[in-house]
Length: 420
Image (tube, rainbow, N blue to C red; front, side):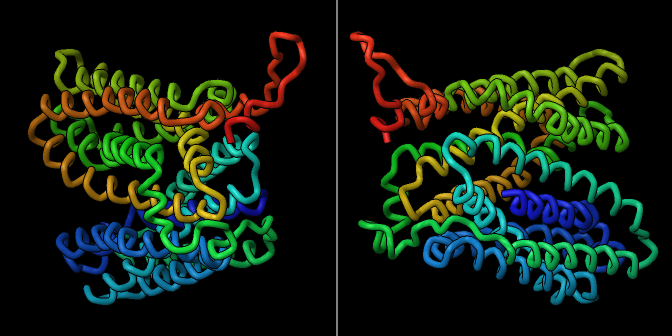
């Protein structure tokens, strides 16, 4: 598990190195224009949507480690070639390889965490993963920002070479991992042929995917598009204040993650997600004050930064909740399929979110705030409905560690045994 967490941190560090500067690199440094730069960002999303359905099947049949190693090598080649590319065609092909590799890493690493954890330790393991990912992204972005020089293409080549080296270093770390051998699809009784069909027949998983889409669409899909555009256009937020807001989001996650974990572990997952919807509704209301209120610029800036911090608090509550719930809903041998399906939903939301939120946040300020405030309240409603589809232990894993006493005074088996 320690090696897997190191892998998560290294991959996030590599991504933080380059992703914030990708648009500038393609549009300005390579002189390929804003259209090509926009296409590169779109290629990342399209590549993920194409490969994730196949990745889930491969993880189920071959195991997560071989799939992860292929993804890492593909991403390393994509990063290195992107740093050397000077034409639109090679830049787009390199971005496709990098995007596909990055997309497959997520469900593969998540499945390895599932294989190396138990129902009791899974929430803490995924909380640690989220903590290290944000820490890696933040540190990578900070160091990368001091290395880049927009007047020198070679500085970006160095940046992408370091990212490729991070992925190859992760290959060296991962080949030493010996995870408990989970059942492969052909070994799992009753699972032959039709992992997707079985997934779509799982009502709780389908509802969780719908809920996940709304979560990622209404929060993550707005960070660097609609919400930032709204802040600049409606609230008069400066670029430095926007950077501070993003830093406040990361800082909230890093500081609050394990304090929040203690609160979350003993509560029903559906109620935790419902509470996140309410917290994000408050965040959107605060954002509304920042852009539509009549306070001073200082108050507007403080409110906008608070919005990002509140989103970070909700993210810290979700990290030990969503991914473990996906794992607990997956039948034996199909964790990779379920993780890939949820990653696919996430990528779809992240592709649609900016396309919808960007123009809306930049021009229709009040409708933008109202719409996403309602989306947040919708998260609460969907979470309550999802709770009705879950068993007691799926909804509250801490019950598996609790022993109940019958009316006669004799201890009963753990709740988990009766509900699994």
